[in-house]
Length: 114
Length: 119
Image (cartoon, rainbow over all chains, first blue to last red; front, side, top):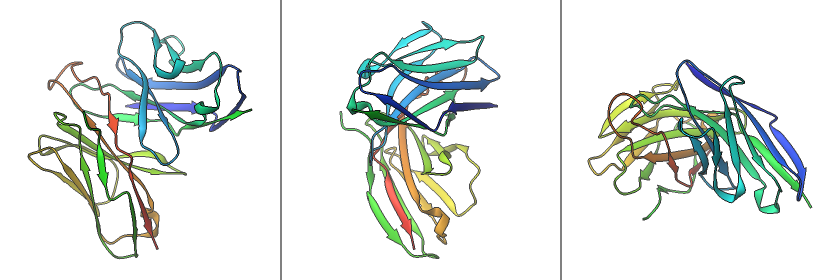
């Protein structure tokens, strides 16, 4: 079984401040982990993914995430928030053994305050 | 390369009616997954099709069904609509590789969704 917990359904940061969105996962086998972003009235777009290579993963738009097995975490960070980062962010886990089975977290809405 | 397309983008139906949603995956992608997104439940997996076969199914009633055609396009059907079916329905395509081990990366490309409103 696999699951994802995103801590904080809403996060507010000031423009220029650090963005930290938390994600903890549960998986009985080594996981694949993803962060997706959803802008209003759009589908989800992949920000970054962890597939057992480097534990620090760099994604698009200046985001990065670090896989910490001991903490079962995959938190998303960005050093400096921009207004355009306001969106909803989803953490997801897959332990695909050939089948496409991805479990998404509930999502975190990021508000950026000017 | 064209992205995932979904039609229609918006739909309003009445309780008891049925609806069919369509999804065209990225060219070359053979896996299509469907999700229901609502404010309270988040993204919930409906089902996944690969090469015209349903491989995975979520915990939805039998009123939700789908199919995939030989060109990988997929349709989702909901019969006897209920108010609670109002949601954004997202389709995602992926290029899965192999049938065992860690061959499938799981990276999915999402369409813009179909916003279904049931009145």
